[in-house]
Amino acid sequence: MGELNEFAKYVPLFAELPEETIDKIAGVGKRRNFKKDEVVFLEHETGSNLFIIITGKVKVSRESEDGKEVILTIMGESDFFGEMALVDGLTRSANVIAIEPSELLIIHREDFLDLLYNHPEVAIALLQELTKRLRAADMRIKSLSLKDAEGKVATVLMQLADDSGKIMQGAVVVEKLPYQQDLANMAGTSRETISRTLHTFVKKGLIELEGGNLRIPDYEAFKEMYR
Ligand code: CMP
Image (cartoon, rainbow, N blue to C red; front, side):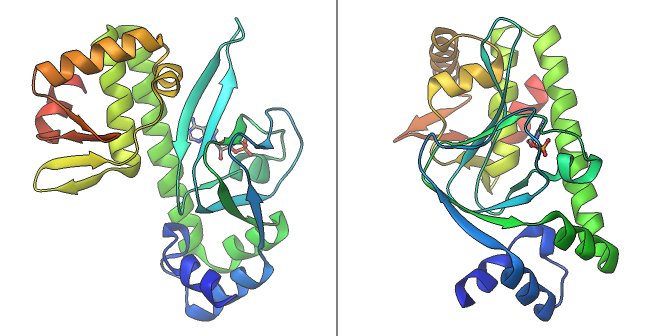
């Protein structure tokens, strides 16, 4: 269990908690492994557990009217999901599917609510993350309704950079960029458009692609152009 306590210390949601509380969470949480492409849960299912990603990656998706997959976001290590049904008691708002072999920490509703009642700093960290997600969703709505292909693809790249990019001297690096089809399902466009637009960005010197990683050399300038 020691290894799990170590992991929990670095989960942003728990960053302000005293050590013994972290030990308690690690003690009550259950660990479960998911294979690549395994469903964690589906939209409209009932369920109220909170999930934290120990290792791996998941996609959060819904189905559009015409049956296409719309990826709302991709989450990685230390991210959490499942808080919506936990908080409002309704069914799951989206599908969550592992896109890499993943290990998840599952926390029961009562245990998480206990944490929120007894440690307001966890509630504040939760609100901060939900605010970030709402801002990202607002940005997506704007991009989907207003922008051309470049704007749509740029919005997805900024979402990935803000979620999981490493910033170094004004540049941002996103390791292991998702597959082009997944990028297309995030941007609401086709795989061909993703391929063509990434190529245009490379030619303009706005991004670099190498070994599956994305680098945006001047991230502030990129945001200025497409935000
Ligand atoms: P829940 O509704 O319980 O199950 C699906 C989960 O996906 C949801 O909780 C959130 O954790 C997550 N989720 C839903 N919509 C978004 C979004 N727009 N951005 C990020 N995460 C989301």
